[in-house]
Length: 597
Image (cartoon, rainbow, N blue to C red; front, side, top):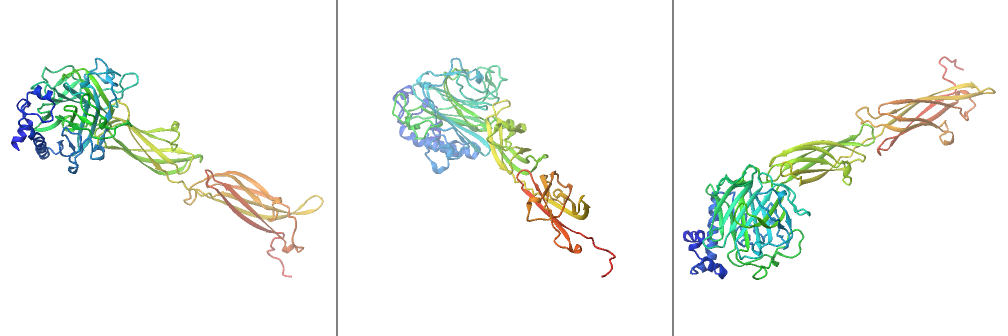
């Protein structure tokens, strides 16, 4: 095993290539072929040992054939039982937190404008439809993110049209949402912490592959020197974080005795998986056809993949990325011109929101309802989110014109949360109330990180209440030509809500109707209009009528009974209430000291 490991990692000038290596490639490197049959087995043993050593030394990183992702210069999932993913798995059906899918670049579209460089801000870049050298023509790109022991691991890859020439590639992970605009420009700007992985696989004899991880840092005015080291400025706006050289088409960058970044390319023909393409593009990944070769087969150095431990390399909370770009470059220089690119969303920032509609009541005018709510905004992504805005839909999801901002937060750190409270008015009872949140991955950036939820508000329950009293007395009055009997009555009508723990509820349209002693005949009823009656208040009423009959000729047995009915309506569909009272009035009052006949 020691000999195999040494063979795998030795200088390419002293070792052999696999038996499926292109003849031109073999001649360029002037290799012997005596050990060719050992290559596949040795390579697997080498990576297997790397996996073991890396797992034992730094469990957070796994840029190997083992969990969580197979870095083996082969997009096929060769070892699914090991719970490790590959591009063909696909990662989002495995353990990935995010996967772009297989993004196709439709040639000859979307190439960088002339003069574009990685040292320029994004809004200084341009794009157009055009052509680039075949070796720089990207056909697909892809990226996946994993959370491994709270470390953010980013895996990336791309394939190209032709392999006749050096491969100089870059993989940007942007914090802001970056898109190619119709006007030939790009949206978004660079943010401190934007991360670029550069991989170079030159084909010259004795040339070694190279990997560098740099971050956007506007404090860098120029390169620190001609050979910058990690921690130094590599070029204007770029700070070198990690670098390494390799051999045999694999390169890793070491920090503190641990490989935190690795990249590989295929050394022989590799079948292309039949994966569907991302973003609704028709066709399959296996439709890939190289400039020279067979459809569905990656010739040597046509497929590239790698992975980095962002948490260990960049540090801090700089894992809140929103976009991914793969690019080809004119040379290995940090200031090389950009060529082709593939760009897509890669939202690793995450915001969640919860909501509970806790209570409701009538508004002060009793023309609608007021509901109270509360909730929590949580950051479940890989880095700090900024410019957080919480917006309520006011209980009208179909109408955005009445939406209002509930709360704002300058930032929410990774794994942290903020609480919010609020209330809204509604014309309906028990509405479903929506809440949404938007945030940016950088301070002042585009608020493209969103989440929303709804909450069912409790129904407000009210019961109207009304009561009425009545008293009466009789009188004999002179009607001018005759004496007549008149019944006088009076009473009080009350709104019984708002007392004894009963929730208040105003009444409107309150009436008191007297039947004038003829309950079967509504034609002589008299209606007293009371109008509005506030909770816990009363209003008097009074009236009189002349009875139509006495019912007896014996004055002592004559009496008159009549009934009043009080009715009032509650607002907002809470119904109405009715109460009745009856009073009986004798013609002759009782005699307190009458002699016994």
